[in-house]
Structure formats: C-alpha cells, structure tokens
Length: 457
Image (cartoon, rainbow, N blue to C red; front, top):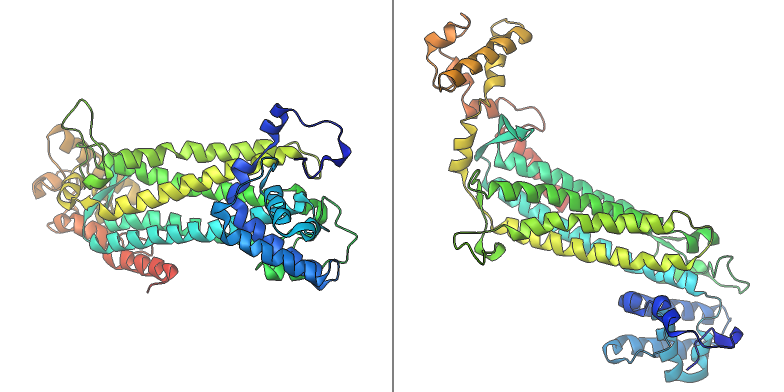
C-alpha cells in the first residue's frame, strides 16, 4: 500500500530507507496521546465548520473505538509512525471521512503535541514516585532520631550527627527534584497544535479550544518555535539526570554502609544477591545498579543536546531521535526510584555500629575547641590546643573521652571537670540546635517540613 505522502514520488522508498526512517517501534507508546489529540482536533474541525459535523462525529467515534481496542489492532506495514498508523486504521474503519482528519494539521505539530501530552503524564507519575521516596525517608528518620553516627568530609569522620539528620539531607535533595519536575511541567504545559508544519494554517482553526480540550494551560505563541524546539524534553532530561545523581550518591553510601568495614546497615535479602563462587557474599546489587544506571541517564541528556545543537529552524528529521533518548531516561529513572524506595524501606539500621564508629576519629574535637572558647580562649588558639590534644591521643592510643583531667590540664589550665560532658556525643549533637542542625528538635522540624510537602501531615 502506498504511503500517505507518496503522491509526489514515482518510486517506492528503499528497504533501508524504511529501516532508518520508520519510528513506529519507538513512538508507538504514544498511541493514547495521539488518538486523544486527534479526537480534540476532529472536534475542533467540526465546530469551526472546516469539515462537516457528521464527518467530525464519525472520526471521533472511530478514534474512540480504536483507542478502546488498541491492543488488538494490526499496525499497517506502511505506517512509518504512530500518526500514520492511527490515520490508516481510522480510514480503513470509517472510509472517506478518515481522510479528512489531517486537515489543518501536520505531523510536525502533531508529534510535538503527542510528545508534550505523554511527558506531562510521565512527570506527574515520576513526581509521585519521588514523593513516595520522601515518605520512606521521613519514616526512617523518625525511627532513627537517636541513632548517633559520624558525619564525613573527604570520607573522613568529621563531626557527630544522627542517621535521621543524614536521611533528611537526602530528603531535601529529592524535595528539590520534585520542585524541578513541577517547574518543568509548568513550562511544558503549552499546546503546539495549530502550528502546522512550521507557519500555521490558512484554515480558521481554534487553537485555544483544542488546548482546553486536552488540558493545556495555554498555546505556544510562535509556530516556528512550536515545532522546532525540544527544550521541554531537554529540561526534563536535565531534571532526571539531577534526580538520578542524587539517587547515585545515596546508593554509593548504602554500598559503603553495608560493607563489613562500616556495617551501619544491612540490606533485606530481597534486595541483595549472592556470588556464584563465594558462598559468604551478600552483594548490594540494587544499589550498585542504581549507581551504574546514572551514566545511562546522563547519556540520554547528552544525546538530545547533541541532536539539537546544530539544527536550523524549523523541523528536521534529526528530531525523530528525541523520543528514544527521553523514553529510555524515563524508563530508567522509573525503575531506579521504585527499586531504591523499596530497598530503603526494608533496610535494617544498625545503630550500635554507627555509635561505635562515632566514638572514634575524634569527631568531638571541634566541641573541645568550642569549650575552650567559652573559657575566653580565642578560637584559633583553642584550635591549636585541641590539635595537640588529638596528636597526643594518637601517640598514646587514647581518645578525647578517655583522657584524664590531669592530661587535659597539661595542655591548658582552662579545662575542668565539665569538659567530659561538653564532648559527649549526645551533647555535641544537641548543642547544634541551629535551624538545619542535627539536634533532635531540629531534625524533627525538618521531618515535619518534608511531611507537609509530601502532603500527609
């Protein structure tokens, strides 16, 4: 069967041309959006008198039937893409009226419409998944408000914190990811239908009617821009890359914390694998794959940036390559967020091991220096005195907690009995009661703030 655009051509396309040109295998997943968009377009054509109301009604009825039975539809072999597939099926079903569907429309503005409709739905779903992750983070944080652990800089033990405080740091990152997705959705919420191939149409169409029917906030303001840019897809890929980066960082910590060197956490058996050779192994494969798939999402962003970087206005067939990269990123992030959320929800926290690690590494040294500051010693001098204390402890296999008061006084006469309570881990944490800090009251406020954002408290 001849292709729908074949009137100008004398020869059939070569098989290899079809192989590189056909996109039905990729854009076929947008069948629902394509049919929905066509229903709104047909309704507008009838309302405006561009086609008869009878043809409009026949087209609408035919499209609704096709949508309800899509899983059993046979895709015509000549259909290059989802748009031509739907039109060919419709015409075979209702006859001549089906050929009038494409009046005042191009595949250029049609695919831009389908793509936006599809991505709008996907953003809503992904944001819901991210909110689910935030809910798990809040739950785990509430359960571990008193789980003392070391916080790190340069992967060196730095200052005392709690596991709850750590979790809420990631909660803030994922909260911003939700915000970026919402911002992306707001900018994407424009209907391009009516832009035609590039310069609109001579028919008296009603673009606002179609936009309203399809749930768009507004229409695009320039027809060239409407069909030729994909910055809405690039913005989404950028947001997905940042979200995946946050997942990857958290996954890296989980990999470390599940190792015997840390043993802060233990993964549920349902989210770990074994070794084909070493019977003792329990490998954090889910976390590692979340980390590993991050490069794939980055690659999808780089792919579309490269596709778009040298294209003149308006539409170029290069842009057919947009959807595969975006769909891959969406599928990947959907999988990683879902798997990570379930894994984190089932993880076993080992607070005794966290506490044991926090008791080493002199993470209360800053508090020791701060104690001297309260005794009227300038901070820089207090810093030096404490540094010498740490050096003495290392040389004598001691910690700041196990030094005697006489040993303290040998470095400064300003030390007194209350130094021991000042450098206890609990005191160190609770004294950090500034907004955003690790004190119990402040972490509870952080949890409550995220819970309000999620919407269940």
